[in-house]
Each structure stands twice: as structure tokens, then as C-alpha cells.
Image (cartoon, rainbow, N blue to C red; front, side, top):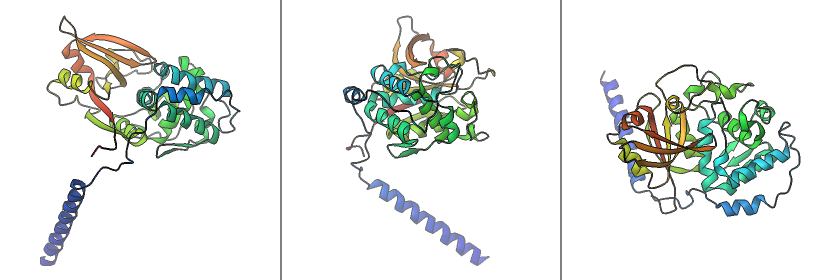
Length: 310
């Protein structure tokens, strides 16, 4: 018994020393000058993409038409808000996070997609995307998704994201089969969404919320208003109150959608004006404070990492 007590005492003491050492290292650590958010300008991207007049067919992506692929990339550069997640798909989270590179690093995003097209795999920053054969064969063949049908670059990107990143909502379906873009295979929970942004794009993120409960924020309007003053704000919400999704058959008071918040203000009548982007369009809605609180399950705020950040 004494031996067991001494062993446990030694173990806990050792763990405590390790914890203190880690904390001290973190306290005295300095920012890594290379740990910055990579950015580029729209002008950089335009100059680059206009040098490419045509693409050769890719053996990796047998169903992608080169002319449509190049046209799609150019459309994303010239009109980033035209990016479209498709009707009746579970791609909304991937479309929302795509807002970040399209506005802050369009050159890097365009080069990544072209490398992926030519080589069948590519890295975005430190994350390798190496899609399966099923993903490569499906890209370019999605149908009845609206404008997404003729936008193979977006199909490629969304399918690769869903294939590369997994959350607990994907636990029963890890491998793609035709039609899975409409199922839980393509779904994204809140933790997975924030993790994708951190890992792929290297942003500094503040996230408040969850998949099941509303965020514990006393003054939600004031909190969101403050976040809108810097960085990019993304709302995780129950979309059934804003837009009907035909493929969502269960009417639950749970979050189903991610949108980019573009405008946020108090109207003269006391209601909240929100302007948000999804499905390739800007939308203006007016809600009461109660309705706004009812639909919001998460607020993600993204700011660029600078070399001076600690």
C-alpha cells in the first residue's frame, strides 16, 4: 500500500513539474516570424491568371473540362462573391471558409487549384490534399446543383475539403460514394469548421458557440458589432429561419449553416439589420434581438497573423 502511495505521489509530482515547464515555456516564448497568414492581392492574382490562355486536359481529373476549369478560377478572382456551394448540398461550410483565401490570398488559392489540377495532389500552406480516385472521378460530374454543375474548380475544392477533414458528424461515412455531397459525409460541425481555417489558412481565431447550445454571450448584438470592426466574422446558425433547404427533412432547432457576415447594424425601428453572403449572393435580413439570438449557435472571428503577433 505504501509502495502504491509513493508511486502515485511520484507520478503526480512528475506530471505537475512537466505542466509547469510547459507553461513557463509558453509564457516566455516569442512569436515565430514565419508564422504569418500568407496574403496576396487581387491585382497579383489577375496578373497571374491572365498569363494562362489555356489548359491541357488532366489525366488525374478525367471529367473536368479544362476550359471550364480555367473559366471558373478566373470568375473566382474577378468576382469572389460568385462562388456557389450548390443547391441541396452540404457544402455551405466549405464555401464560407473559401471567402478567406478569395479575399486575402487569391493568388495563392489560384496557384493551389492549378497545381491540384495538374498533379492530382497539392499543398495549401502545410496541408496536403491528396484526393482518392473516387473524388477525382466525381469532380466535374455533379448534377442538379445549380451553377455548381458548370464550376468544376469549386466541385474539386469542396470535395477535397470534405475528403481531407473529418469531424464526429462524419464518423459513420468516411469514404465518398456518388451522391455523398448531400449526406453527412460532406457535413461540418463547428469544431471541424474552425480547425479547417486554422490549419489551412493559419488565421488567428476567436470562436464562441457549439453544435448544441447557443453561445454564452450576454450582449450578443454588442459582441458581434465589436467583432465586425476587425477581421472577418462568420455566423453558425439555424438556417431554417432564413432559407429553406430541400434536402434537410428534419426540422430541428439546431445549427445547419455557415454565412459570412458583411453588414450588421441597428435599424431605426430597433430591429437588427444583417447583411450576409452565401449561395453566391448578398442577402439583407431584418430580425428582432430575440430572433437573432434564437438562430445563432456560433460566432467565429478571423484575423490575420502578423509577424509581430505574440
